[in-house]
Image (cartoon, rainbow, N blue to C red):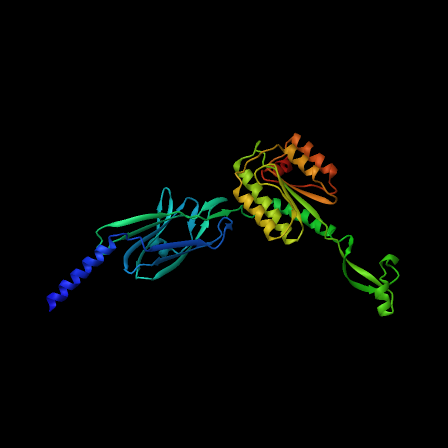
Length: 356
């Protein structure tokens, strides 16, 4: 009797082995995704994955490896890193060994961050599975289809931010100097000081008292951020700092709910006046994708600003340096602007001038 059982087990093992030899990965599906499509350097991103066995046989061994290029950091504790992370001169990989029963799936996740600005593709996924007896293995590769853009970091501790803060403070004050007749917030009793044209005769008839319109202050403040990417005397570090300052200026204007246009002489692309999450996201994406490359001269950038100038428009110019010829072009912009142009230097020019 025991012999029949033993023979039966051997027969079953041979049968399962023959079935598993067909294609160990035929019934294995893998899906993985990120929780965001745009980040900033050092921001934590969650990578989630799901491995499913859709077949009738168990998979006794499944090797799963996610490979990432240089510039990606795995954000897990040291013990987890020692168990699952492999480093090489080409990049870094996250490795898992799994056992899957029929019609079962395993879910997992880990966290990564991006070291610097740029565009990254969600890494390749390598799958390795063997037959039941381990006589042979099959390997396949799944390419990550999604990309994530890492935009420039905020220049929070940059000395230029103090210059920007003073400029934005002046804008904030100017916003509340003039009332906007189109923005009505209510009515108040006439005191004799208000002009007669502000009296609301309908409200006066309702209350039996002279009532005047109470207008809100104007919100028609217009700002344009102009970014100069001309490379003369500018190092890659200076240009990266320009992108950080440009992003910081956009974020500050968003906080103040001030509409702004974005203009460049490089590959950042131009955006018309606006504000809000979608407007900012488009700018941040362009900053993340920037080479940075310059297509036109600084003079051309100033000409573009002058051509699109509007009443009461303020300008924030982000530039690596300004030489004598650039200052003449800047003077042309200043002559058509109602307010002082705020210049943020990506290089160290401001401090050199202060030293002189």
